[in-house]
Length: 213
Image (tube, rainbow, N blue to C red; front, side, top):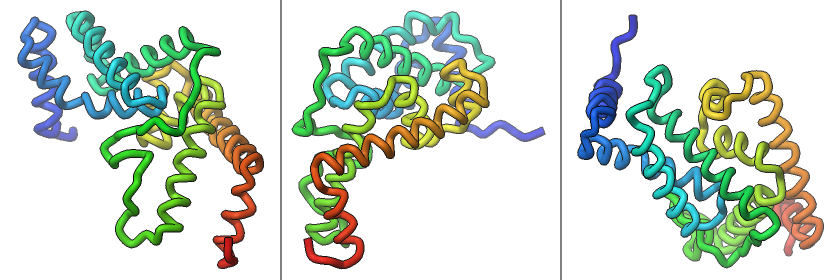
């Protein structure tokens, strides 16, 4: 039988204390997961301030429900589920009212999506293409359905396993796999439409083949 990692034991101890009303233990759990919650909310909401508001709401909900937390799942899975559901509820409230602006600066642990400084080794042209691609993905994610957006973010952005996504979303494992496949296809289609509208598809192809823009 595999021995539990020290961090798992530490988290279980914190959970036990938090369930008994220990605020210090709960705050430690928040510190361990606040970046994860923020980044999932950021990808789903497309706006830094919205992601901050969602994060606060998620931890308020978690604090109110921690006493009833079912320890058959991990705290990380539980907090993911609350985050995803909170984002989906908020998007439903805003349906038809939300506009995506490329002027929004989206911050995560990798820096900002609207990055002004080139990565090490990038030429100015490569840096511009990288920013354009991130903008395209953001716009494409905003165009596909919430169901596809959710599973794509959890799998391809956050790197969760199919089993974890199944537990978070409540979907059967086979449904998760097929939905992720469809999400990727829809995303590719939307990116193609965006490039077609802006004329960047031909330009990117030309650059890849070494032609002048």
